Length: 142
Image 1 (cartoon, rainbow, N blue to C red):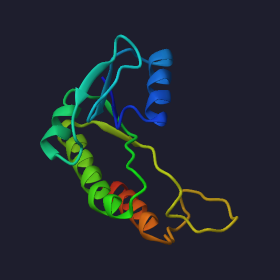
Image 2: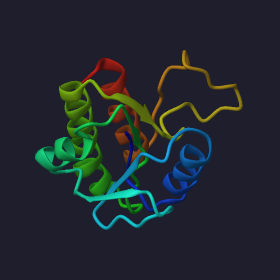
Image 3: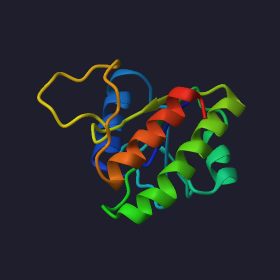
Image 4: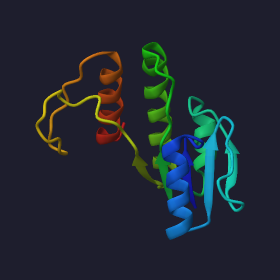
């Protein structure tokens, strides 16, 4: 089972298409109001700020893809992204599920230098600080 957390967004839809076309049709789509991309998709309504719902959504999953997005609202990001990341990591650890996280580059330095896995985070602003926090949660295993 491949599970996409944060279904319905542009990244999630394209990921679901690619998974279906190249790997498996055993796909679970998770969001507050998930919508099928393919007839074979399994829908699982869940709010990822709820730890139990997140764990239930990942039960039986070999791989989870965290593609969740939030409206561009700093206070919402500060309140919800760390909780969703912690819940996702805990659920993956509980079930031995591999986690793939689709992130952005907000937390990196604002320079023209190439960014690599070794580039230190230098967040500027509230949203960038949240992105650095949740990336570090994942890197540290929560």
